Picture 1 (cartoon, rainbow over the protein chains, first blue to last red):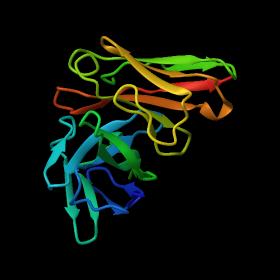
Picture 2 (picture 1 turned 180 degrees about the vertical axis):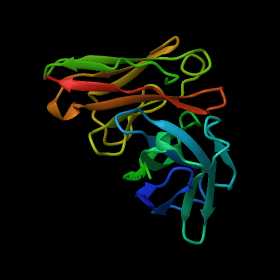
Picture 3 (picture 1 turned 90 degrees about the horizontal axis):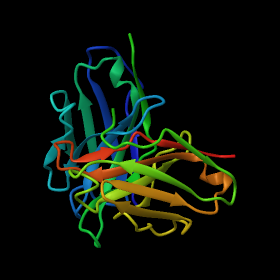
Picture 4 (picture 1 turned 90 degrees about the vertical axis):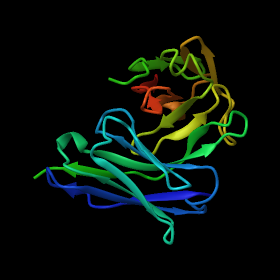
Length: 124
Length: 111
């Protein structure tokens, strides 16, 4: 059973960098045909996909955030991380890490495992 | 504004059926059978309940079903139960640069 757990500071000051780490157990982030993603949810609002790291190490970001976001990984710890630069109050959200696993029927990918989410508040 | 359009809320009585719509374009729902639905209870992470438009992951009740017509996907929940009260989000692959796109979410209230 794959499990994901996001961790990081719950409070970040405006203009600083938000940094979160997702620790994965029960599966390797560097093998298997999976996309390891970050998704966020502002309080009382819907879900926004931030970006992914493919198991090969390649990345892709939502264009609305691309200039400020970096996803990286530490394969020795089976972790992948998110950094968001120059944060503002609009970046306040619950941040989820999730795996997009492959459907053998369609050869597409769906968010089948999610972490519990971690609330990050941007405030001075 | 979300790229996929869902009603903000729907409601139904126990035992009834409800349907939640999710409208996109030919660049997402209309062009591909890569639609999924997620159930989110308060304070919890979303849970995958439908993928490939119509398929259910193992362990998901057969009271949940999905369909698609043109640019609109739908989630139907039959035999409503109190435990179904939650938010529901649709998701699709998109050929626009966002790759994956979510709907704005629909709050289901079981009366």
